[in-house]
Length: 441
Ligand code: CMC
Image (cartoon, rainbow, N blue to C red):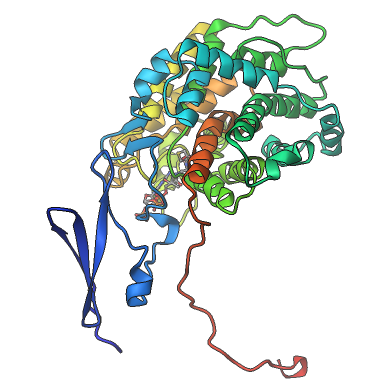
């Protein structure tokens, strides 16, 4: 076996910093790059060419996949900024469309920029009538996340111009407005279809009110859209709008890096979001809380299950890959949850169970030692239920919120001309062997 010495030291020179890696009697200097918030990374892009070594980091726990100017988060301090603006200030003051513009185009819009952006989105919010034929092909029991992703993929059939990898800025802006406009309609039609209600065509209401209208208007009754509900929806969408290189966003970027269209990239992101360890956690949380309620509300029993290494049960809505202190979004959502339930006069018993679990977890050594705190999904489902949404739609709401982030990340990747994403691996399978004929196996 070869003598192996692997050490990384950082050095500062006047011009730049570098890390030194020693291996097998040779040393290599690797540049250290620094972000605007002081984060440092060892640039290993030339490491294999120089040394024959690659890095191994299953789950990308310690890998920076890109340099991005969109979202900053500090997991230790519980900080989240979109383009330098704090999530707390944006959630308090901005509209979701304003935040979408900020994420996608880099600056807060002026009044006229905002109006033009909103008008462009609303101009594109209708769906081709042929979409109804595709909806008709799904069983009414279809999970709306599957429908959402299929419908976003279908946009490539209706707007094949988006497949051109050499698009102009004007063409990219049109595709962006189309997707922003159509996703709420696609989601609402998936819902009305699943309950056998007629679809509602989009109106000229604001983005959130229009979505609620398309979801809940029925021919036989008037719909009064409550401003408390509109405000809560606006806040929830802003809180979900971007979260740097999470699982679905990384998926969008890696698909986009092959120069697949924005629609294909976002459809892939929707599928990645669906999993219960990611966006699907909001559905899993409410199902867990309901199960605890149905089981007599014994939170201690479920805390014990979550800590038992022989039990696959996890406390859904707890823990985060990056936040190791608290999730700033969870704090805002918890307050929004109290406000919405009070304003709508909803008394949901699972809210008490959720608060009880949170209290127990915050003082439990297992959760404290592992820095496990409630994440964005812990309280969002309770709000969605109070708004009258079916559980299967919760992750769809996450997708509606995350859309501008996916678009911004896809656009940044393409604007920067980033190369195709293609990780390497360390092979651990069989070494070469002769083919064994069937009769000898
Ligand atoms: N309940 C019980 N134990 C947990 C939990 C949990 N929810 N989360 C992590 N742990 C334990 C885990 O067993 C491990 O223990 P040990 O060190 O003894 O082996 C330790 O904490 C570290 O966990 P990990 O799985 O290595 O951490 P990760 O960064 O790979 O996973 C996570 C992060 C979010 C997938 C995970 O915390 C989890 O499964 N949480 C529940 C699902 C959830 O709420 N997901 C939504 C995430 S926030 C929204 C989003 O980004 O989509």
